[in-house]
Length: 323
Length: 49
Image 1 (cartoon, rainbow over the protein chains, first blue to last red):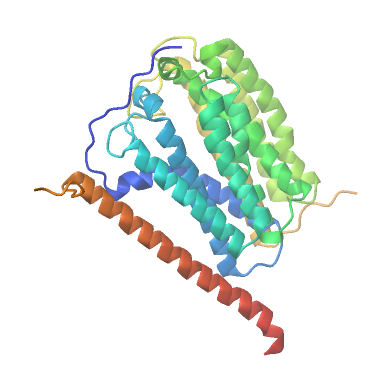
Image 2: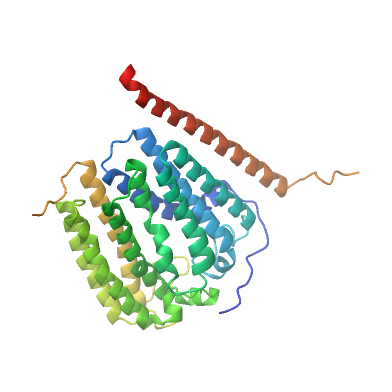
């Protein structure tokens, strides 16, 4: 492991935008979207105001855990090109302030969820925050190449929290949504880490390409992709998804497998200097294009899957029934 | 003699910002709990109206 330089100590005044950035708004939007899908798929009558409060709690909880992550990871964020402009490593916000914000938002979201909705969803929200901040950030991230595999459980839980908020239960179909995001996470992050490998190595983060090499990572991405596609089609056979969902899962899954196969056959991650432009995460050299393509498509695929489920349930389209 | 507890400049500004955030967050918490209570009460009262 390489020595990690300390975060920039020079503090400049922070604006409200810096505090918004601490909440990782793009990640938060995906969390809210998957949680909303879980809430709607529960098909449980819910007052719209209470539904809005539940989604607010999940959004605030996601923001709180993101702030906790940034408070702790300021040292490694300062080393990586993708994260060095974040408020803590750039010195605009003190780590202590980010920590305080994260704790305040986490407590606020869990307490409100419990008082306003139900304590099952509050407990699941608390578990999600604790898993991300404590298990992933404090423990796994710097210790094992399985960091994002196990840590991905935290990112997979929001649909379950949404489902529990609406119905007070966590049936098998809710866990199926969790499983989809859980298995989707490794190919998604490992595709990204193939062409940001140098940054992870410099920061001492044991991502899979750093520890096991690019070839092994490409093979594991393909293996997870082979497991992911049938899993994504499963809701169409468990009374959750309809014909539209099945079409999206199968069609998108075919593209996903094609991109994963191309990546497995490529040499992405083998060479140094994979990124062509530090400011653009998607600008890579030709050799790493298959990794970039899978990374970008994985985001679209997950979005389309949950959008199909959400659309079907909002339009009251019947799920597929099999004899 | 200067007051050792007196803060000035960026740290005072940061503290004011934190205080304002906490006040707004607590205010929002109270308002949301109040609204949720009304919603829940009205749901339970509906059969009797």
